[in-house]
Length: 66
Image (cartoon, rainbow, N blue to C red; front, side, top):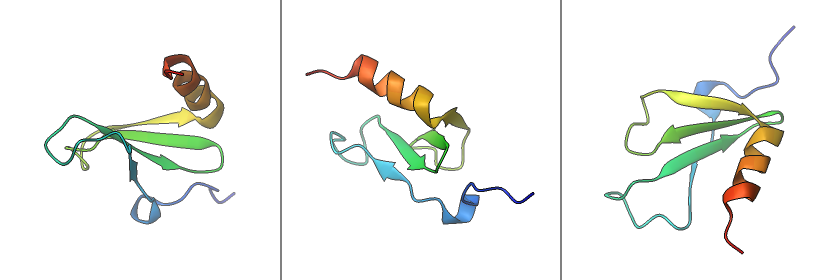
């Protein structure tokens, strides 16, 4: 069965709007139907996490400042 996830070459990575530029610490995310990929923006060829979309949503909700 083919994977519904985007291939590595077609993932669209998004950096936080709170990022201060290229020299600051930040993460990037790429979203798919059931998975959120997370990586260090300074190491795009380095390791990444693949989290279930619901787990990522819960994490973001738990650390968000209202």
